[in-house]
Length: 404
Image (tube, rainbow, N blue to C red):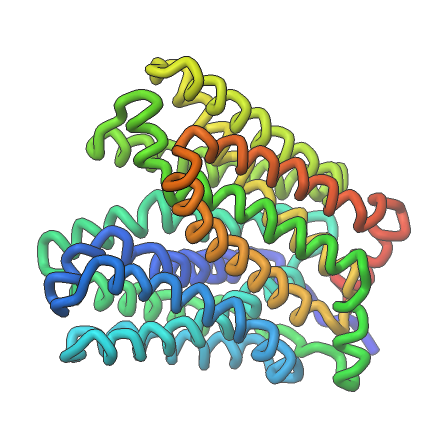
C-alpha cells in the first residue's frame, strides 16, 4: 500500500502552532485577571486561583484516557471537536452568574485542552518528515511559549479595558480562528493503526518511557518553582518592581521561543538525549548563577537578566526532546497515547511545582528556589539518560514512525 503523500508546505504547522497558542493562553491568562475575577464573583483570590489548579489537574488526569478512547479517530475531526468545545466553554463565560458556574466552564475548557493538545502534537509528528520532526515539534512548542509572551499580556490588557469576562471572550475568538485555519490548512491525517488496546498500552509501561515521562515532570516541576514565584525572588534579589517584571517576562518569553526552536534543531541533528542534556545543563547553570546572586544580593540586573534568559531558553528546550523520545520508544501504535502521557507529565510537574514552591518560600525562603530548580534539572538529566542512548536503531524507529 503506498504511503500517504506528505504536504510540502507548512500552513498546517502554523494552524497547529496557533491552536497550541490558544490553548496555553487559556491556561495562563487567568493570572493576569485574577483580582478582577475575585472581585467580580465575590470570592477570595485564593479561590479564584483554584481555577488554574482545576484546569491543570483536569488536563493531567484526562489526557491519557482521552487519547486511548479516541485513538482510532481522525486527528482532523478530533481537533475540530476539541476546539468546538474549547470555544463554547470560553464564549459562554460572559453569561455565568457565579463562581461555581465559572468553575464548571473551566473544567469543560480543560477537557477540551486534554483532548486537543496531545492531538496537536500527534498530528505534527505524523505530518513531519523524520529529518524535520524535532524542528516542527519545537515550532508547536513555541506556540505554547508565545502564550506567555503575547497571549497573557494581551488578555490582561483586554481584561483591564473591558472587564475580565472579555478576556475569556477574546480567548474563545482566538480558538475559533485556530479552528478555521485548521479546517482550511490541515490535511486529513491518517488515524493510528487498528490495534488492540493491550498492544497500544504495552509500550507505555516500559521503564524507558516511564523514565522519559518522569524526567519531564521533574524538570517542569523545577521550572514552575521559579516561574510561579519569580516576582518575590527577583524583588528580594534585585529589587525588581511589578512594572520591571512585565518587561522581564516578555524578554524571557522571547528567549523561551528561541530555546524551543534551537532545541528542535538539536533533536534532529544530535538526537533527543543529547538535546535534553544540553537544555538541562543550561537550566542548571542559570539556577546556580541565580543562587549566587541571591547570596550576594542586591544583585545588578546586568548579571541577573542574562541568567533569566538562559533559564527560560533551557526550560522551554525540554519538551521537544521528550516528545521525540517518547514517540520513538512507544512506536506508531502507541504514539498518540505517549504524547498524551507527556502532556500529563508536564501538567503534573506544573501543578506540583506551583504548590510546593509556595511551601518552600514560606518555610525556607525565596533564595532556596534556584537550588531546588537546579537540583530538579540534574535529576531530570539522570532520568532521561536512563531511557537509553540515541543509537542508529532509534533513528530507524523514528523514521518508521514518521512513515506510518
